[in-house]
Image 1 (cartoon, one colour):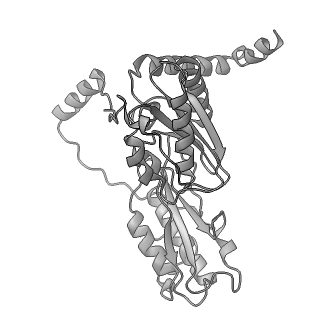
Image 2 (cartoon, one colour):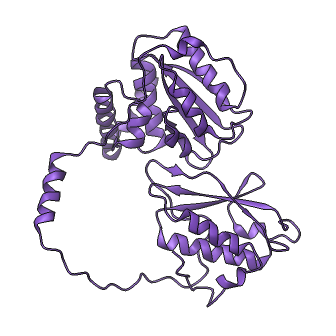
Image 3 (cartoon, one colour):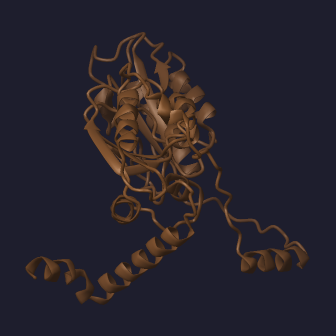
Length: 336
């Protein structure tokens, strides 16, 4: 009884009650409309209404474990496959089971993906050692069996880059990769038709947004909400004799320009396998030398201009960094 009362405490406030009702309604809707689709596809491609890691964890426990009887295997990765997306081709051949992979990302928290879809695995970026990875394997509610456990364990071994023998029975079944089409409501179609009939409005001239004076924001942009996609880590080789203060300031201004143009995106910087939260940390005499590799990735829901960003960062890490130091410190460069 004490445990039951504790679990119901969230319902004692209006906000908690409304949040619980919204989650329950969304979870029930997904459970009723899944129709053999992969949960990762629903979360990745559809407007599911489930966005946070906590909500995803609750949904997976209710839907996959309690309702459909999926088997789960987990591991804190002792090693990681160099290219997780390359595994999707192998997983797509496992027509005997349905799979879901859940990765506890060090920056973004819990992320779920259908491992048979390379785009969903690519959105995770690079897997990191010692982070938790959970594999769910099931057979559409037919109940747990030994093959589901084998599938989950084998998938974990592949994600860790371990050579493993794949049970041949995994290739015999009816589970296929079915792309989920995003549904469009009739209301939205009517609105689009009305909008198309209206004459086009004259473009209004608007002044560019004011940029507050002071030290610009760099390295980490505003918080990204919703289901997050992340690029792989791209390398930038230091061409200057040392990655000194001038290079640091150039990178700050490049990333500030990118964040100003795309405030919904974040730029993450890595050096020697660790995330750099303050680019100033790279400026230590003799630490980052000529030929060193600094990596970056971009996260968000509509990622753009990554190639241009990489090109500017390469120049900013070279002797030509001074091109980005024009104007006062508070000036935001129009690079994108």
